[in-house]
Image (cartoon, rainbow, N blue to C red; front, top):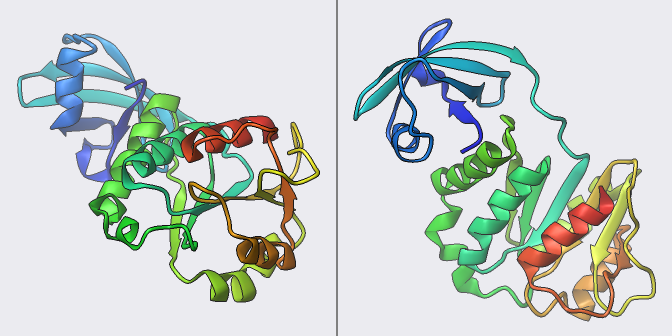
Length: 235
């Protein structure tokens, strides 16, 4: 935890917070903190700054905080992601939050198993928890927007063309002729398929909506590896 994230309910005054639960446990076990220590803090979807530890017990911590720094800028990226395997999904959420992805759209695909959509990791509280873990790691406060689109064809035909308009719009698809661009300086939409990739019908629909197929080379990567590699290459 490189940043203590503060909820609105933590504030007992304009400049004081009381923390409980996992964050207190982390202060004890990882930071080995003591009264008088100064911690990096940030309010969720707000400013960052510092917090002076005024009180620390087994159950709670009280800090005096000063929030005066903006969080790092988000990447100008919307990630269109075929719903991954549940265990991988948790890690991908954390990676995306750490890397600064602004928006994640979870999409159905032919190779996405129906059971993936039943995972408890898709519950709003679980999604938020994993995003917060990524923000803590990267010292960021702004949560990515997460949307769920379970119907591929209506989304690809009715919504995707508008999302892809007037921005660099790419679909990762091994075996295509063009390599993924590097160090782009513009708003971007990136579609990444499931394990096994998009089927030809889906690639055709994505292309019809304005997305250009690109590759990362001859190697076939796991989804969580491809997400990190593609984002790092683009930005």
